[in-house]
Structures are given as C-alpha cells and as structure tokens.
Length: 279
Image: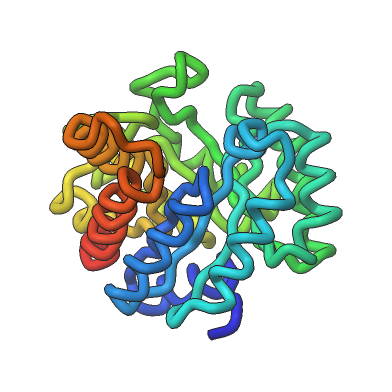
C-alpha cells in the first residue's frame, strides 16, 4: 500500500460522510500498534506527531522516518500528519524536511493568539504549505485542557469560523464544541447542534480534538453532524500505561522491556480497531 495523506483520507471521509481516525504517536511501538489496529479494522488512519512529541525526541526526523516506513508497509492507507505546531521556527523546519519523510499535512495552532494575529500567522503558513502541496488544518475557539493553555468551555463561533476560513484558506478546521484535551474519562458532552451549524456554513471539513474524552455514541453523533477527522491520543496512553503497570506488578523482576510492553501494544491495537469501527 502506498503512503497516503491527510488530504486524501479526509476527502474520502467527506465523500462517505465518515471521519478519519487520527492517532497521536509518541514512540515507534505506538506507531506499530496503531497501524496494526487500522489493518485489523480495514480502515485508513493518520499517524499524528505533535510539537510536544518532537520536543520529547529533540528532533522530528527519526520518528517521522519510522512512521513513513511503517505506513509504506501497511495493508491500509496511512497518512502522517503534524499536530498542534505552534512554533514558527519548527513549522518552517517541518515544511523544509517533511515532504521527504512522507509528511504532507500539518495543523498550525495559533489559537492562543488574538483573532487577527491567528489569521495572519495561519494564512502565512497556509501560503507556504500550499506551495508544497500540503493540506493544512487550523484551530479557532480554544479547546480545553493542556495545563491551562486553553480556556475550557469556549465554543467556536460559526460566523467567525466562516470568516476565518475565507481569510486563511485553510483546508480543515478544528472547532471547540465541548471536548477537552487530555481527558481520562469519556464524559465530554458535545454541542451537536453547533457542529451541524458550523458544518453547514463552512466549505471545509471539521476536526474534533480531545476525542479521547468522548464516548462512542457521542462520537457517532458528532460524525453524523459533520465531523470529518477525529483526533485521539490520551486514550491510547491510558491503555498502554495501565497494561504496563499491571505487567510490571506481575513480573517485578523483569528487565527485558519486550516482556512487559507487549501487552500494552496489543491492547492499543485492539482499542484502535474498535475506535476505527466507531467513526
């Protein structure tokens, strides 16, 4: 299977009134487990590397190269997407090296800025990225969580969102509709009417961030209302770390990480396959 892209996968989702599952990757093992789950479900997905993950590794190239190799060997279409990139310097570097590493999309996150500054910064990134053939996602209306960096409870204004898309020429928009990053329980109540209103007004697909905190039925309703890309990260980490704790407790003398990480990877694979069936 050839490497796919966010643009191709989202376009297919739009055509089928579905959503692309997009899973955040921190380690090689996560990437392998995610793709295995996607293959089990028979559904194409996105591997997402965030700016925080890049900082963790201190560079982006090794993890992106690994994801590219895994994607190219996959039985289903896999795209590689850069998530929540805020740094102008890092975005510039990503645009310089990303295409050679299989990346053809990014999410520029200027949501902490005032509206006019968000528009200006996002538009400049879009211009550069589009010249390279990249698909660009942006955010309007702060999505909760993340150590107070975003104000919880904020909602995207539908009319402002239409103006933002026209002013920036983005290809997809992450909207604040009730979800919150880093939730450890699936208790988020989404504003389905707002999703539907924004979807009807905008000419671009909508993205739901913080989907780990959204229950299956609520995710299905969001997709029916117009969400076309669903971001999931924390749920995978919760599953893997719970399995790791259990295995280390069961094998207190273990020193070979393969013995106590395998179960976590297997459970991530199962969770990914399940979530692919939901959206």
